[in-house]
Figure 1: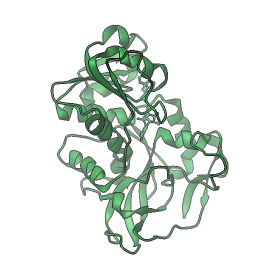
Figure 2: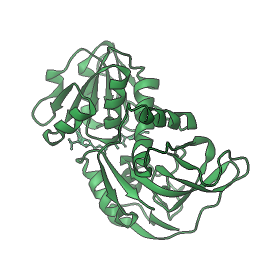
Figure 3: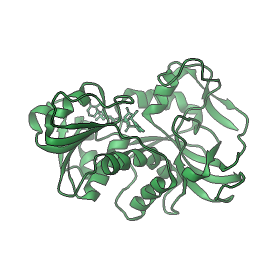
Length: 308
Ligand SMILES: NC(=O)c1ccc[n+]([C@@H]2O[C@H](COP(=O)([O-])OP(=O)(O)OC[C@H]3O[C@@H](n4cnc5c(N)ncnc54)[C@H](OP(=O)(O)O)[C@@H]3O)[C@@H](O)[C@H]2O)c1
């Protein structure tokens, strides 16, 4: 099969495109012919070696976490059949979707709604899983609450804005001026241009914060919470930053994989609660270019490999 892969950790230039052996389906697994896979920020952190534990990585390694495709082989005990159109996110701690084929545990894969294209399904898979886990399972966001979503034009945040509105919350988000209209169209009630305004000066009394930016933005986010408020962080590593006040809660969403979680993403799409983000398409052979764009941290929506 064709794949984009690395033989060592490093910058975007270490990404190669070429032939690697086809995977086979182990017990409980299916092989999926991948039609689309999206670029997530985790992919270039992996490529850089940020997740490497010394001595445990064997090269070549194929990056990539989410996919949409069609089942082409079924391992013993797997409850899907050849020809099923499916989408999902591979198991935590694994990579490998920048390829024409992947082997995945069938229990974490969901059927793709017919009306959802493979490209859109790949764009919504990890972003949807993460946003739902953060807002609902972790922050327990409720109708009538106010949430500040940091990084509104990004992949996860774009899903989160729509999902928060679906829950019935009021959404404040941060973005650069170029993406103001985009986040408004996603449903944001109030938009802060982070280059023109310090969000800590103009936002206060929030019930919740969802930070997808990290660094100082994450640390400063506690300031906008009302007493008893909660904040969830996905761009600050494995642990949430420590609050600088003792009347708020800092949370790190665990983002567990499951078929049920992917089915929630599918249902939200089918119900019209979520529409796909703006998408820029790449071929797998352009993986280095796609990573340069993702790593710039300034684009909107999702970057997706159209593989078939
Ligand atoms: N399971 C997990 O824990 C999990 C899952 C998914 C993602 N993540 C992490 O979550 C983070 C977000 O991922 P993503 O894929 O959604 O990101 P992304 O799509 O790469 O985010 C890019 C966006 O961030 C915005 N941005 C950059 N700096 C900003 C700032 N200072 N304030 C507000 N917006 C800013 C940019 O908008 P402008 O161009 O307007 O600046 C751009 O639209 C990453 O660190 C990723 O690793 C974790």
